Image (tube, rainbow, N blue to C red; front, side, top):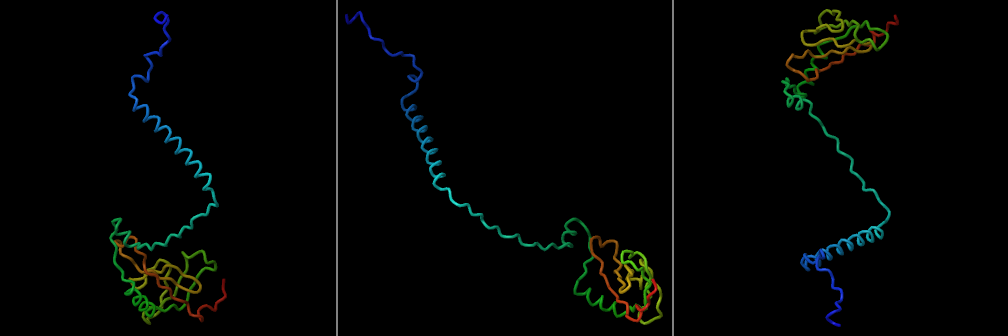
Amino acid sequence: MNAAYRSPSPPTSFVLSAVPRWVVGMVTVLVWLAAGACVAYWVMRGLGQGAVTPVPVAPAAAVAVDSQAVARALGARLLVQNTAAAAPVQADAASRYAVLGVVAPANAGSSGSGVALIAVEGQRAAPYRVGAVLDERWVVRSVGRTAVELSAQTAPSSVGAAPAVLTLTVPQRAMTSTNP
């Protein structure tokens, strides 16, 4: 009976039988490590929930920009004007010119018109319109009821350089007129 009756044996063509046993063990260990890492992550995240405090951000420091250096970097050729030397030139220019009177529009918005009566170095006063050249160095920039602004003539090669501005005040005796 023994020989006639055979018990069913497991199939020999099973897929894992071709893979070495140590590879199956390593894959099993890696799967369990990944599962453990997921559980640890979610436990730590659940236990670590607390009040969220924002981190203070330091304000950005203001950056000083040297406009002449930027212009030189972009290829402009500038006339170097020393600011220490410009102050005596303006003080000298203010003492050279005297405003004796102005004819300016009543509204402050029209700076493109007006005439100033200016004496140069104590000589006889002459009328100068806005845009007129004064003493070959200064241009009348604007004429107002209380002041006259002059700007220094700049050379064409001084691209980007701001011209010096000189403000001459009108004396009180010249501002007594009430004509519109």
